[in-house]
Image 1 (tube, rainbow, N blue to C red):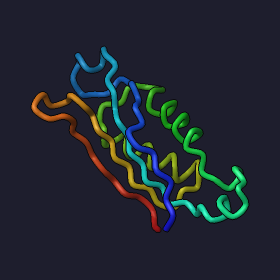
Image 2 (image 1 turned 180 degrees about the horizontal axis):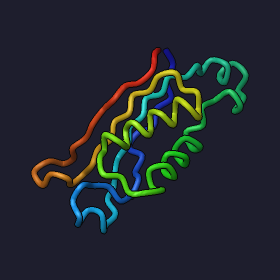
Image 3 (image 1 turned 90 degrees about the vertical axis):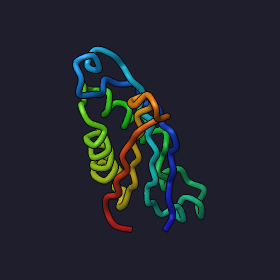
Image 4 (image 1 turned 180 degrees about the vertical axis):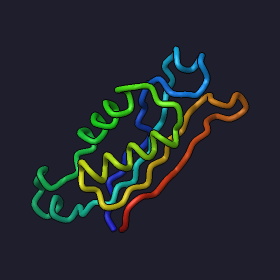
Length: 117
């Protein structure tokens, strides 16, 4: 299975359950593994067959910053749904990390897999 990868996509947004969190911006770091048949793009050297990581990144930034969200679990599900519905990605692994959420940890996070390879 081919994959397109995005690592540590930084999204600054309003995220959290506490009232103080709802008044500030925090960073999320997103890692994506997306199933994609890269062979047509490689064989033709034609961009139209590629999954454009810039387009994906920009769409996810817009999605996650359009309104406040309380849970990183919600962020992960929103990302997976967007990738599968809008980009026709058949399988995705999404990792959402929230740096600084726990003072004694570098980051906390969730990881989900959706779809089929």
